[in-house]
Amino acid sequence: MATEPPQPTQRSYRAPCPGCGAPVEFKSAQSTHAVCPYCQSTVVRSGEVLARVGKMAELFDDHSPLQLMASGRIVLDGQEQPFTLIGRLQYKGDAGVWTEWVAYLNDGSLATLGEDNGAYVFTRPMDPGGPLPDASQLRLGSTTAIDGKPYSVAYSGQAQLISAQGELPKLPPLGQPFAMVELRSSDGEVLSIDYGRTPPGAERGRAVLLEDLQLQGLKDESAREEKGRQFSCPHCGAPVLVQLASSKSITCPACASIIGLDSGVGGELRSATQDEPVKPVIPLGSKGQLQGVHWQVVGFQHRMGQEPGDDEQFGWSEYLLYNKKRGFAFLVDSEEGWSMARPTTGAPKLGGGGNTATYLGTTYRHKYTYQAETTYVLGEFYWQVERGQKTANRDFESAKGLLSMEQTPQEVTWSSGDRLPAEAVAKAFGLDLGKLAAKDDVGPFVAAKGGGLMKTILIIIAIMILLSLLDTCSENSGSNYTRSSGGSFGGYSSGGSHK
Image 1 (cartoon, rainbow, N blue to C red):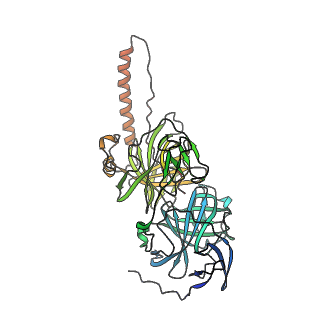
Image 2: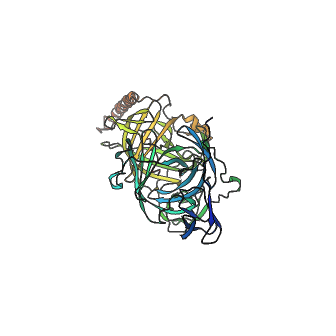
Image 3: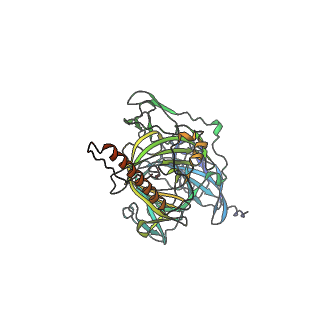
């Protein structure tokens, strides 16, 4: 077991709040601001004196299992270090709301535990080895080198602080937008650049699982009330219940209208009607265990894809799965079978003119390039979903699994996953296997497309037989019958933006 580093010889500092007189404590000498837990005053520390600089807005209730003073352990540079969560910053950007927890490490340094829709990334401040590029130079999808290491630009946009809590090493002006860029590497690293500071600050780290952090002092789940928000559908008036605090869109259970929640329940609700309903094979609300994790189905969307230069379209379905400690995943039902995917932390490196993608040491071969469009949705979604949403998709595969890239004008998202046999899906959700559409048997992954060629040959033979029969039946009438032999391919998608 790793030896614990020595306890730092640093005393904490406590002083009365200038607003209400209650004690405000600073555990870290690096912390310059704090929010009084009693009156929500924002105070700044100057030597041994606290000054009140305003009042903090209320926290957005994201139903996080984390809370201030929760403690855990993490391995950094080969050594296990205890840490305590002493502060919390909530941000809102183009793609939603996320939280940055200030982690006070046992050696006296500070780190960040980022929380975004149930996904977690642990980062520490880094020396970039020189001036950071201007935010305008980091275009979406481009590559850049920071401290000699190549990264891909996965997100570039505006963010603003909406609330804070506890002890803070930084405090951007409340509600004032600033530029933020997120870079990702092919070995799974995340590098975040905050342009709200001068000079810009950079933090680097990796994705973590809550269970691996050995956390203690989490919220008491038995005492936590999780009442859903309810309102009337703006289209038909039926009651609509929102179960997840992070949902940005939901559909009405009565009329299937898509309702935008970006202005909040009680604000201006935008709605759009949907026709041509698609019934999901797995009902919303279903619970099941896949790959050792207990999931609940909270959303469903049907999508259509089209390859460049091909007149035909193909369709597939995506089920949005949720677990409170693992966040979200996507269960995909396509013509090629069932598969399960989750957003990656890093960004695979493209090579061979885009014919390969390398991620975590594995090389995947390009399989499909297509445009995807959302045609029908049901349930709740953590991104702003709407019918007609379009993305540019590229799919790759290897003997180890599947890899998918999805791009919008604002973000590039990568997801990795594995194929699943229909039997596993039926067993997980207690479904009749016969009700699941017949799929190709899931065997070992083979990047070569020989199987697709054989499938095409069989389709052509079947069509020739059909044409022969039709010609025999209609030769007296003189009618002609032709049909394209092109088939459709099952898409594999990440399911939208995951910022």
